[in-house]
Structures are given as C-alpha cells and as structure tokens.
Image 1 (cartoon, rainbow, N blue to C red):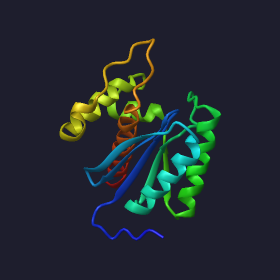
Image 2: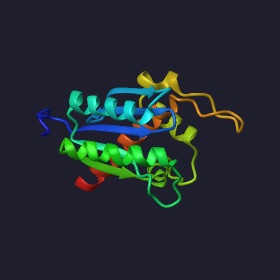
Image 3: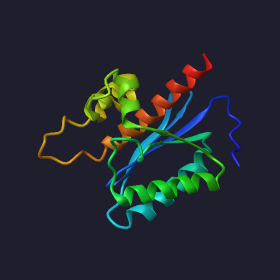
Length: 171
C-alpha cells in the first residue's frame, strides 16, 4: 500500500538496459535521486531486487517505464522478460505503472520524433544543470558502445515527460 503522504506526487522512473538500469526519483519538479546500476552477473535478478528496494524506500505514486512493446521498439528478450517482472513487482506493491514510448519521449522533449538520445540527454541536462550538467556523456561514435550513465538520462526523461503529460491533463 502506498503510504506517501507528502504534498507532491512522487515518480520513480526506471530505464532498463543491457547493463542493468538507470533510475530517477522526482517529487514535483525536483529531482530527488538518480543513479545507474550496472551488473555483471544475473542482471535481471539484481535489477529486480534493486528496483524493489527503490519502491520500498521512496514509496512512489507511479512507476514509469519505457514501453518495450511500442511500435518500432526493439528490446532483447531478456529486457522484455525483466520488464514483465518489474510490472508484476509494481502490481505486488499496488503501484500504478505508466509506459512511454521512445517516440513520445522525443516528441515531448525535442519536438522531433527522430531526435537522438544524446539530444535528449543535453535537453535534460539543461533542465537540471546542477545535478546532471557535468554528467552528459560525449556524443557516441558509431563504433562505440553507449555509456552506461546514459540510462540516468533516459530515466529522468521518462519522469519529466510523464510529469509534462500529467500537468497537461490537469490544466
């Protein structure tokens, strides 16, 4: 049962990835916590355990995830399995789940459904310069792997876009 009696709506956003996951906790327009967790072994079990701890610690009103089943989205079978388990975990905690597609994120943040993850990271860093300004990874080259800390920006983007959509509905 959700026991969050704070004045502000609390959002936990998690971005599941090949390395582990990134998360962001927002309360109102304030970024309360953010981090990325990287696991070398048993990635799904470790991710699930850590997400459960975050839910217990922060008692969010909603869990926001990428919609891994959205049209044009490709996720590895392991990530899809983790996604299903995270949703089941949220249901166990009686927590609402919101799913956002990558297209929604890019359209809401950049006004361009074909924008890049790096463009989104720079946009998010401008909104939270003290917290994230120095953490934007360099632009990825075609032959390099994505930086693990990009998961943080994905999670913050999920939280920000969810909040934008929520505020749009209440206005």
